Every structure is written in structure tokens, then in C-alpha cells.
Length: 211
Image (cartoon, rainbow, N blue to C red; front, side, top):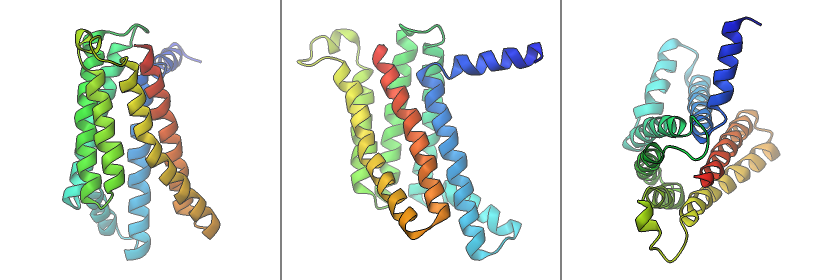
């Protein structure tokens, strides 16, 4: 193995050792996987021409106001993941200012996600993955002197973020069971990918409790 390969491997391991890297790995897998499944499904229905693929690509990111809101949320989540990565670059405890920036930007991303989910007809997920998640992130970003005056500990906000993922996780499990029973390969694969993403996001949520 060359020195460059060793250095790249060490850098990748360091990035994935903290919550920021875990968040963004889940974000990247979800984005690329979701886009691939969406384009493949559209081309299977409409034909295999390049034009159909490009139309499906545009539809995925900005085909409706809801899709545009979710695209905005994804961009914000990538940004917040990078803030977390920088905050945890030296391990625990993290850089407090950068960690708070990650929480704040993640909260805004959750609000954009909630709006997109609501516009796409998913009110329960909008309330949990959106509003509940945002509340946990914004609460975690409160200054320490504010959190110390609350009747509950700061860990409550982190646990709120974890709990906000559970309804979506249950929905994915139900979809996977239904797709498996019907022998639908592509929906089953999509559900499996989402489960992997949620596993990474939950691991990052738990890792942030060390802050």
C-alpha cells in the first residue's frame, strides 16, 4: 500500500470516527441511493432514453415545492455534518462553538425537511423528523448557562433527536416487510438502504451525547 493510500485510509477513518462523518456518510448514501432508485423507476416506466433520466433527475431535486424544500434540507444537513466533523476533529470534548453551529444548522435543516414532508403529504413524519428533531437540535444549541437552569438535563435534547427518528424508522421497517412479502426487489433494496442510513444517523446522535 502506498503512502498516499495509507494517508487516505487514515483520513477516512478519522472522519468516520466522529458524528460529523457518520451524519454525512448517511446523508451521501441516502442522497445518491434515493436519486438512483428514483431515476431507475422513472426510466423503467417512461423508457430508457437520456431525456427521461434527466427529467427524473430534475424532478427528484425540484419537481415540486416539497421536493425543493427537502433538497434544501439535504444541503443544510451536509453543512451541519461538516461543522460537527470540524468540532470533533480532536475527539471529545468537541469545540463548543463549532458543535453548537452544527446543532443550529441541523435544526434549520430539520425545519426545511419538515416543511417538505408536510407538502408531500406526510404530516406525522413532518412533526417528528421535522419539528421534533428541530426542537432537540435547537435545544442542544442553547448556551450552557441556559441549559443549567432548565428543570431537566441537556441530555434530554439529545434524546429528543434520537426519539424523533423512531417513527420514520418504523415506517421504513413496515415498507421493507411489505416489499419483501410482495417480492418487490427495488422497494426492498431502497428500504434496506434507508435502514443503513438511519443506523449511521442514530450512531451519530448517540455519539453527540459525549459532548
